[in-house]
Image 1: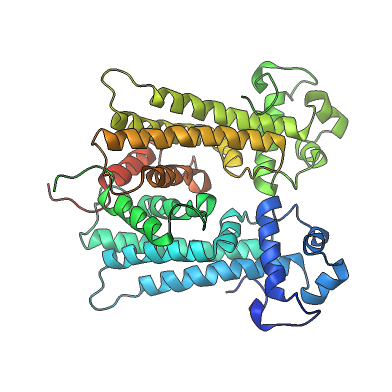
Image 2 (image 1 turned 180 degrees about the vertical axis):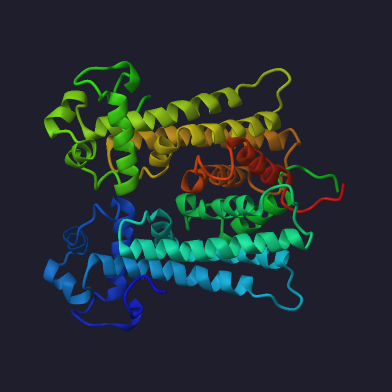
Length: 208
Length: 208
């Protein structure tokens, strides 16, 4: 259920030295995030890279191919994290797996911030975008199921609907892409600690 | 420090019956959110409304004017909520005012979802957008200050940096615009209760 075309970018290398697909993909994602995907043309991308349009088309077949690759990059990482967390296994409670998926999601969002940013802004304006939304829905369903399991095992409060908890918890995680700066005050571990502290234990000061 | 031009839309009514500025503004915001602002032309908007381009320009001077009005709509509401919450007053702790600003922000996001959605996607590609980002920063600073005050008065835990708490708390609130549906399962009060329950008390089940 991949949204884009076949090969991952780094393996295919052809064309003039200094530009490979992965460098073009990075520049494209940056431009899509800055100007908006629909407003960005292959001409804009060529200009950004200092290439001619034919030179770009030597490396990639279409703008949509670049979008699909970027969305797959984000979705493949998130899918791996969520699949692992959804797997029931000895010694791992649903609560423990939920905390772990929050932590690992933060790591993915930080390590793949440009492509996850693009993913979170997808509105479904093309087949590639609709396929990405379909994969996002699968992730959301798994996460809601994991929250429900953690409630059922008695670890989490049961007075907030699990589907709403899942939306809000991962809404908080996803907000990272809007404000996180790799060179800013907080490293990923601090952010992950803060999210789990807030979400699971709450902000209220507890007497200890 | 308004980002757009003068008058709020509903008061100015002119041109052919059946279309006033506020109807055009609503359609424009919906289109900007669906296609992206940069990818939307005044021709697209005219087509959406079944009007000619000259008929649109009879009502509004530019696409940027529509953007400015929509952003002001969102920002004026949020500024009113945050200004009220920032006002120190007898009998209202910073903690109480923070809980209140979360609740009222949810109400604004639900009541003005299209214009807040547009606001949260602004990237600073024009003077109007930069002015809106400036106003957003003012709001963020006030909210971070309020969190810091609530920590200082001893109501909130002090082991998570207040600036990070503020980002995450309002990241959770802002995520609403991405998934909230007015005809969906949850009314605004339920959502506001869920956010305050999660953020202040946490998801972990407490023995009572």
